[in-house]
Length: 248
Image 1 (cartoon, rainbow, N blue to C red):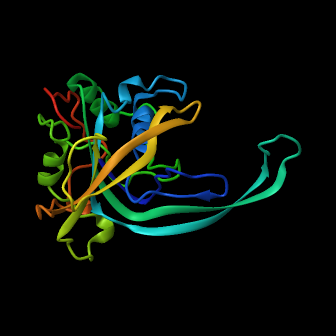
Image 2: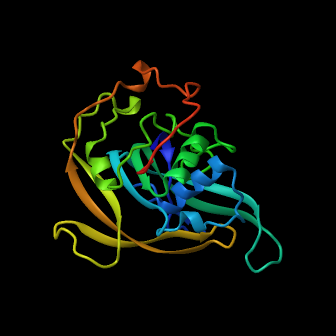
């Protein structure tokens, strides 16, 4: 999947008046996007999205810029009940002009179902917040790949030049955020961190922890045409996506 847009936000520890964003898409945000495509309500089971069924990796094609908005909301309900607050200020962080390549690996039939849903989503898709819409189709024509090595797929997939970054220098290296098991060896130069963004239930807002390895790779330098020059538009769809196995 390609997640690109003027603004996107992937909060993983937002509480009350401070709404953060991670530097790349969170697992909960990506699963929420896929649930929108499928038309799954918040109360639906997420068993088929758990880490033992689906693994995820992200390649940062454009880091974007961290920005912050100051918001006010009127007549806000209090957590403990009683009269509403007249005004509740909040600070909301987001990424401007970021562009990500996201790969997930799992059952081939389920991945084909997800690809079809992304092409023709039941509900509108958004990048972390409902007002943050994609500037490019989320699905890719070559998004179904017969390969179960997420890192290898992310390393070789063509790099996309965003229309918002036409005048920026081509980065020589790209950052990867890859899920790993809690045991086993990893390259000593890579950074491992826990992230509390694996959704168990959206209805109850219950999450658990995964471990993410951050690594750097050389840019494939196989740039695709920028969006203004491409024929890849929203209404051009492949009605029958198919795959044998591998990431989407």
